[in-house]
Image 1 (cartoon, rainbow, N blue to C red):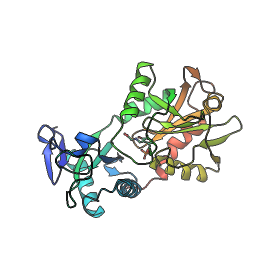
Image 2: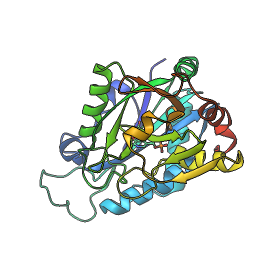
Image 3: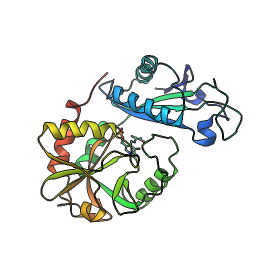
Length: 285
Ligand code: PDD
C-alpha cells in the first residue's frame, strides 16, 4: 500500500511529498517535532504531546501552524489514510520558507507542517522487550536546551550510530558531573538494589518525555517507591534493573550498560510490569 504524507495543507503520495529547498527546517533545523504512538488505530496521549509541541514552539517563537483542533484532524486523517493500526505518527513544524538568513523571516511567514504515519511491527517490539536492550554511555555534547523537542538532532544521531556500532540499541548521555541525562531518543531509569525507581528530574537538560509522565502515573498506581534525582553511570551499573521510555518503544528493559550486565542480565520485574500496565495510564483519541 502506498504511503501518504500531509505536507502544508495537502495529502500526497510519499514520493510527491516534497518541501521547499528554502524551508528553514531543511536549511537550519529550525523546527520542532513530536512522535506519538498509534495503538489500535488510536493516537496515544495526543493531548500531552500537543501541549509539549505548543511549549517547544513558544520557546522558539514559532507560531502554531493551525489551531490544535485542526492539527488533531490532520494527525488522525494521516493515520487513517495510511491504515496504521500499531505504529507511530510523526509531526514536524518548521519556521517556514524564506530566503536564507539566520534571523527570523518576515512576520507572517507561515510555519511549515509535515505529518507522516507508519506501522511498526508490534511482535518485533515485544521480542526486543523480552530480550532487553544494551546501552552504551557517552558524554552529553548537546546544546543547553534538550527540553525543546527540536529537529536539530546531530548529537543524538551520532550517539545512536555509535551505539549501533557497539552492538547496542541506545546511547545514554552523561553530563559533566557524571550523571546520566537521558537516552539519544528516550528517557533513562534505574531500579536501585533496595527497589527504588530513579529517574532524572525534568529541567532544561532533558526532554520531558510523555511516556515518562505516563510511567510516573503507573509507578504511583503500583505503589512503587520513586525518586526523581540524577543518577551516575556507576549507580546504573550497580542497579537491579534499568529501562528506557519513549513513545515508539513504551518501556524497554535495559540489560547491559557498556557491556556489563544489569542485575542478572535479563529484563526485570519492575520494567516488565510497567510495560504491561503502561496503556492503562495513557489517553487514547
Ligand atoms: N524520542 N528524550 C529524547 C532525547 C527523545 O528523543 C525522546 C523521544 C524521549 C522520550 O519522549 P516521549 O516519551 O515523549 O517519546 C526522551 C522520539 C520517540 C523520537 O525521536 O523518535
